[in-house]
Length: 467
Image (cartoon, rainbow, N blue to C red; front, top):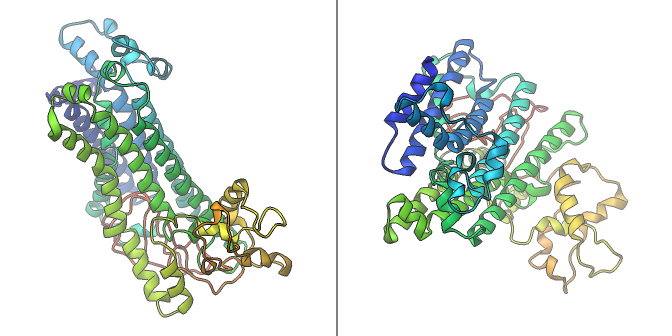
């Protein structure tokens, strides 16, 4: 028997709690810490942070996969403990088998290919999609820059450098609590006790989709803006177009929304009476406990980015830099900090799709504008600049409700329009990671939150701001 197999069986034995939720959350948390320790060792030795963000994403992937395979792993460990030969142990299901079993009904769901319900597969899958997209984005950026300034003051301090990897393990575990709690349930329980689709499934997954849109599009717009600035296609100090015109921190809004959607989906399932009985709980306290457990995920994300790092550090920096400017004050007062304007005011900056003065805005045009706003040229021809001065008529159709003339600023062609968000003439990368408690001069990370003391370097052409 290999050392890895022995360690696996020891961990499974030590975490074989009576509570199904603890039987899943605890080993997954241990796995997150172990993986981050494994990533920290070479990074600390080489004094390199290049693989810090990508190691976090890989940990999300590994923990998600472990939550799916834990029932099969425990079955194998139990069989081995009972003396079953290694060759006769139950085999781990393949991804195809897991997918095929997702809609199994009745008792068959408990035995088919490891017994995973579609909700368990979907929530793990969505987490993996998010982690893969964000991880690849952050990794490509740090490889392009060659370093991460957040680590400038701790790179040569092994203990502090290693500690941020451990904090990252916590950041992986807490947001995934709803996913892990749902993964603790036997598929047979979900298949026999619940309808195929719940209202909370639809609501939660819809919110997740909206959040993913905001985060991914904000990333795209920011990356395009940075590329254009490096090519000297505009001279803006920071980005105010697209999603950044309806929220000063759209990426944080997107991330919190995604975890909120996952929490709603999981909480709706865990609150059902048959599921509560399966968990060994009854009455309102059981529902309150599972709902609170799921709520920790978005609440933790919200608290870190709005109260600890993220927004507070960025807001302070730009208040100090631009606080006395009237245009900055106007933008700050008119643009929500986190939650976008109810009726996206960016739509007011789109030319009507017909010649009629009261024609409604085309939804396709609106989406096209939001997605590609980061690529629009800053200096427009005179004939085109009128697009951004268009104001909705007094009798606006439904899609223009809530759009005020004051929101139709020509931010795209006027470099005097500034906001307190994203970008500046420095390489103070406000990292779009987990929002580490970065006691630096302005480095917000939109993936992780750790006590990283880093320095800021002024560079007018660098990838500044927002991540």
